Length: 200
Ligand SMILES: Cc1cc2nc3c(=O)[nH]c(=O)nc-3n(C[C@H](O)[C@H](O)[C@H](O)COP(=O)(O)O)c2cc1C
Image (tube, protein in one colour):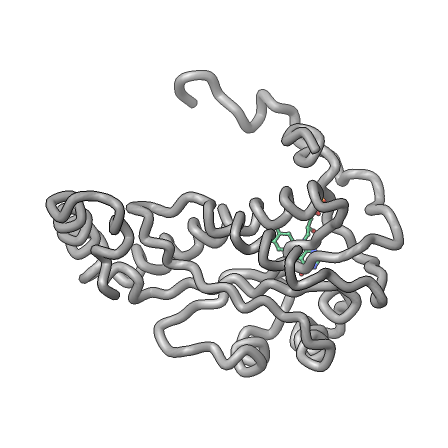
């Protein structure tokens, strides 16, 4: 599917076929493309919990205040940030490059994040946002649909996925086969209200 078509046909779908399954090859293909999404310094500070187990999907629906999308979808991806990524053997983020480059990145990461937990959180949110859009567009190419979600009880979801310390749940994206179209778009703001050429 053409990228512009994927962008314009992606909608937040609410009703999914609970009997539709994604093959493990399709899930692998999806996730292998998701990790090609960009991250600052290529620090790959995202961690994905991809849920296929029906019982766990049902627990996620409960944590999502009864919303049906997780339990009816074929796949739930919980996108989390690892706030320690900047210091966890960071030379591996540039393993295909010379040691000088690796050391440069390591020093930059240390400078930017070591004393700034807000920066660690912000970066996790940016990285997961990029990855979420990749999931949703790739799903369209696979003939599937998606719904991004933050309507959940954080602590309950953290408990369901066994969230490690120093990790942050950013959002989840469910993927599946739609059984009902989205209602018509809420209505986009005019382009000239939100986009400015060269400066505000
Ligand atoms: C960060 C984020 C969180 C969202 N959380 C939910 C949610 O919990 N449940 C839901 O049904 N839709 C959720 N949505 C979907 C939005 O309501 C939807 O994207 C928006 O209304 C625009 O519609 P569209 O995606 O079909 O263009 C969320 C979207 C985003 C980007």
